[in-house]
Amino acid sequence: MSLSLLEHSSYAPRRFTRRKTLDHLTPAARSANMAKIRATETSPEKLVRSKLFNQGFRFRKNDSRLPGRPDIVLPKYKVAVFVNGCFWHGHDCRRASLPKTNSSTWQQKIEKNKLRDQKNISDLRSQGWSVHVIWTCSLAAGMNEISDVLCGLRKNL
Ligand SMILES: [Zn+2]
Image (cartoon, rainbow, N blue to C red):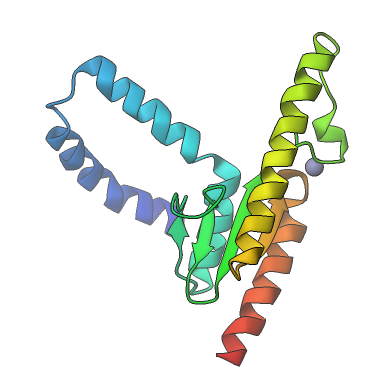
């Protein structure tokens, strides 16, 4: 049995007990709750978090106290990481190509997102944060890059 399967089976019972304590929620409220959790826990983010965690880094998730609510924040190193979906954040790659219909509406939305991202990044940098963006199309490469940076920081502490 692989380690991930072992972890999964040992966590399953705990998840059930936790679910019982949520029973004060109406089914509609719970389903809205679950949808929200799914929205913040997209799998590329999970992948990056678990890789960092396995390398011994500890972090906060979706820190709403910081500009842009970075996906991963490593307070010890003052590093903020965004894991950006190529389409929504307007990456210059094939994954980000616009749908053929309503393309100007999409274009506007995505331009707005890009401007907001730029503002958040510059706000974070002006507060002394080092900011890294990992694009989902280059997840493995981006992951290696951030690992190298963090390992370098760890050595200098
Ligand atoms: Zn991309």
